[in-house]
Image 1 (cartoon, rainbow, N blue to C red):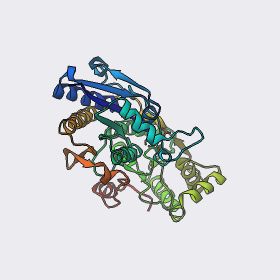
Image 2: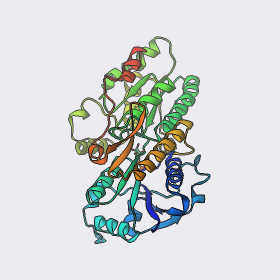
Image 3: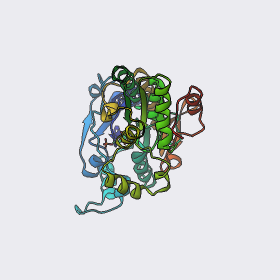
Image 4: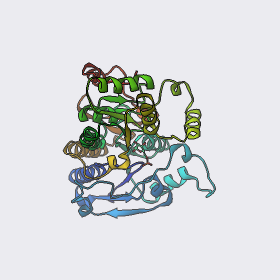
Length: 361
Ligand code: F6P
């Protein structure tokens, strides 16, 4: 009998913990089937590599020494789901090519490590008949059906450190500091790092803000003798007027004003309305860089090992998840087209409000 052949790819934005997950999955696969009975094929740059047949046969040694390494040893690319079924100028039928690469490589299963976009394509490939097992990564923590994604807590740690460091300079200069935190359309990363870093005001996409209330919250602190204010602002947040608009219309208006980021708009308005000196900070991709936290190393290892169990049981068309603290799996079809947003009445938001943090609403 030939060897079991398992493909692995990482797709979408990178994050700390991808390599730890790859390692956890590979080690558990070797352990379950025997090193000499499995061949793991690393597909380069996500679905791009699957479409164009760019891959490498991996050796057990490739998975050693990568637990602490940031980024992904397989490389990654954004290949948007909405473009998958569209034939572009290069005339490549992406879905057909992915299926052919899978067939040419004689894969028994494909592990897809990624976020929401990755899961949509994984689900489509599963519906097309491929044996797919998903693993939920993203600093955004917005994958439906799982309490947490790997990469999130590392990014929370970095976001918290940014806010910590901004405190001292905000204090020295008596300034309002507006810190922009990634997270795409969801506010998880801003909420967690804002709370952990002791932000005074937290603005989330899930709670449209009123700029008057945001300015008042800064002014109230100044009036009470607090010489600085820290705002943790989600990159995807918008105000109550913008909330009434469609996404495209919002983007058009922002471009017209020349203020395309959340922080630039908010900082300008706070300074104009209060006269308080205001600065912006955009840590950007730093939030995705470097070594995974201890939490993420453990989560990644557990997720990877669980994916190997699914493989062993021939349970395809699922993605690994944590539900109520237990490692489990969800059908890809149940989670693929959904986004997990911060519930506006969740305990974390309530705790923040209880200690006087303003959400600008
Ligand atoms: O999905 C992860 C993420 O970091 C989002 O928080 C952010 O909006 C986006 O990726 C940035 O994408 P890129 O790395 O392509 O600029």
